[in-house]
Every structure is written in C-alpha cells, then in structure tokens.
Image (cartoon, rainbow, N blue to C red):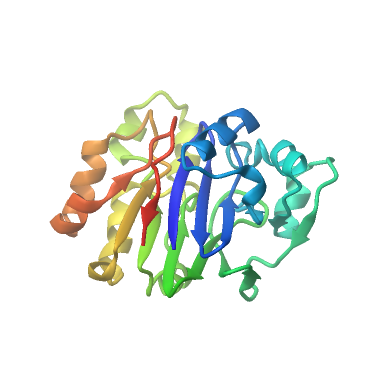
Amino acid sequence: MRFAALGSGSRGNATLVESGLTRVLIDCGLSVKALTHRLASLDVEPASIAAVLLTHEHGDHIGGVAAFAGRYGIPVWSTPGTWRAAGIATEIDLRLFLGHGGALRIGDLSIAPYPIPHDAREPCQFVIDGDGCRLGVLTDAGSITPHIRERLSDCDALMLEANHDPALLRAGPYPPSVQARVGGAFGHLSNQQAAELLDRLEHRALRQLLIAHVSANNNREDLVRSAIAAVSVELEQRLVIAPQSRGTGWLPI
C-alpha cells in the first residue's frame, strides 16, 4: 500500500491511497484542473479511482467533488450529515455510510470510518487496510479522544494534522473568534496535540509519518519538527510535511 497527499490545508485537500488494483481519494477540495495535474505527476488516470471518500463538508475538502466525480463517473462516499450539509445538487453516484459504523470494502481496501470532534455536521476520518498494512488518517480534529487513540493505536503509517502553533495563532492575523474556533475543542490540532498523540501511540512501529494541514499563517516547519522531536528525534528525522500548493509524491508503507 502507498499514499500521497495531493494538497493539504486551507487551499484544498485531497489524499490518494492505493493498494493492489484499487485507488481511492480522500476528500476532493481541489479544482478539476489542479487535481488532474497532480494525479498525472503520479502517473494516475482520474478514471482509475474507485471512490472519493468525504471527511466533512467544508469547502477546502469538497470544493471540487461534484465536478471531478461527475466528469469521471466516480462514486462518492459520505456520511448522511456531511452530504446534507454539503448541499450539492449535482447528480452523482452517491453511497452513504455511518461515520461510527463498520468497515467499507472498496476493491482491495478495507476502510473503517471513525467520528472526530470538528465543527461540521457529521465529520469522520478513516483507518485503511490493504496489502497487510494499515494507514491512519487524522486531520480536522480539535481534540484527541480515547476513541481516536484506540483507532490509531496499531497503524503502520499516519497522516496526522499539526495545524498551528498556539503562540503564533494568538499573535497572528485571525480575529479572536476565528482564533477561538481554530484552537478550540472542535477546531484543529496544534503541534503539541499531535506530538502528545504520537507519544501515546506505539510510534516506534511507524513506517511513515505525514504531517498534514499545516497552517501557512499560524505555523512553521521548524516548530512542527521541534514538537515531534520532543517525542522522538528519529521520527522527526523521517517525517514528511505535506505542502499546501503541491503534492508529496508517493509514500510507500
């Protein structure tokens, strides 16, 4: 199994996961033009994607889904709450699932959704199994719950949000109401929260760590790395930080 971030952050989110003959896209917040260009850099044809899985209805995660899925005839999987809140009128091949339900089987992948605390209608993230490997995905969560720790406790790779540094957020350009939202229990994970989660997990077994949804206004790469290094210098030396304006390339697990 391997995965790649095609975009991560407020400019648009999309993550490609591949196992065997199956490819799925987690979120589709990029334009069709940008997404097809970044897929081409991975030698991936859009029509080869078996499904688009939505985490929640915010525009940086679903902004391109109707146009992309409609153009290439790709099924879209969503929780009922996310789909209602998205308000998409385009007719597409929609498959609904429960964010707290059982695993979905899509081709060679087993995909287990789990609920997260975020300011959206019915948000979720995913743990994905394929080729004997397990990838855990966690972005757009304001706090770490025991359930999240349990779901991510046995992963071979993690895509983990480290959105902001609290001091930079307080000193940054956002008004107090937005600062409170971003830093609140239903907002986004800070560098320290991401590091604390890694410290509680069996991080020594991780083969890949992708740090995602890093704010351009309220964070810096050196602060992300410093927070992770406080948990594990070896892990900090191996981690990859997903850029907002381009993809990462394939990350094998």
